[in-house]
Length: 170
Image (tube, rainbow, N blue to C red; front, side, top):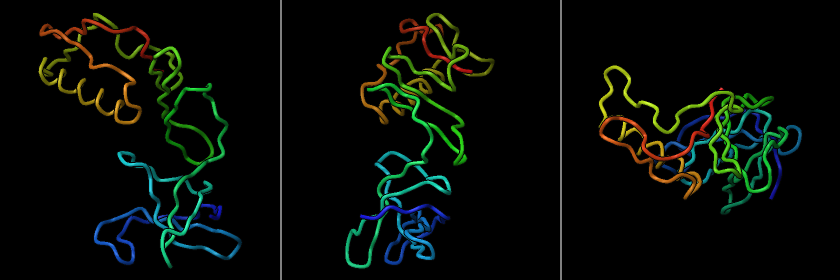
């Protein structure tokens, strides 16, 4: 296993593949830049920022993959919490934090996103379309961290009929 720094990337098939993959150009030591496939966890689409560090391992003779990355940004979570964010390599941008109070906090949580009894209809959006959207969002978040949020119960009137007022937005 080696530690390297991401210097570039491209999305294309690898040397013996038939499907596009994220290929990173990783500098292991000065002037030793290798192209390796980045393998993220299933259900996750991640492209490490230029300058990020990655672990590179040999998967087979002549075939190396990067299996994990860090951007060296300061962690901002307590033990047991999880935060997902985008980055430009020097700072955290869009953030989604799952905290220990069972809250989903977006971008440091300065305003509420949705609360119990908030209306769910916006002009041309139907109840069924909104209920379907809520189910999709719930499934996405639970796909990242299973059991994070329960199915969000809604009524035909378009109001969320159960839950918390702790989902926060900037």
